[in-house]
Length: 245
Image (cartoon, one colour):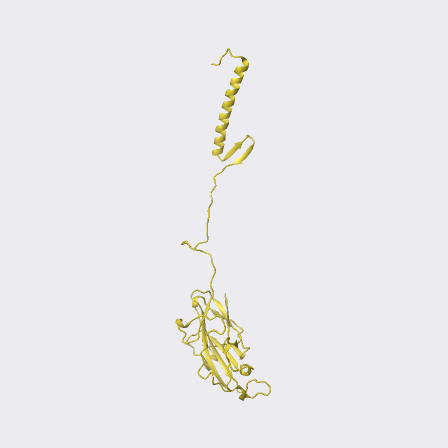
């Protein structure tokens, strides 16, 4: 019971102190409740959000913990030895590449004769599909020849035929059906104008048959006779420009 004998001012001061304590207690409880609900009231005026945080991550995977995004691969390989067994395929991306196996008379051409050599091309087992285009012949890098003034080079003619049958024989008959002629003309300018398709993962093989011939009446510089071609050698190199689909 309050002291009824106390002066009025003392009694009022006691009640105010009790009221202040009660208000502080209620304010503290309200702050705790609001903080638990995600809102904190400071000084009765400003509001500060207080919330829990969380993060989630994902990555492009393959389903077993490995990377799931990448690039495809495109790679062509060649084989110059019929019957083109799997073990004979290899990749040669710089001039001069593998040596074509021309027929035995290749170094003994005379006017009106020709020599033949095949090459097979396909994509590798892990490659996507693509196309091939045969470029004109250029001198083979690092191969010494005896044709300094290019008289023999400019006299020779080339024909190239293609087929997907790896058992087909590369000889004079390669320029009949079902082979497809892809290039014909002077050695240094004849090139294919149509691309040949290659299936992915070695699913198809393009076989090219090269015929190099010395015409009976070759193109020669003024004042040069056919006899000037004797004892000369050349080493043409051909590039197959490959492009993925």
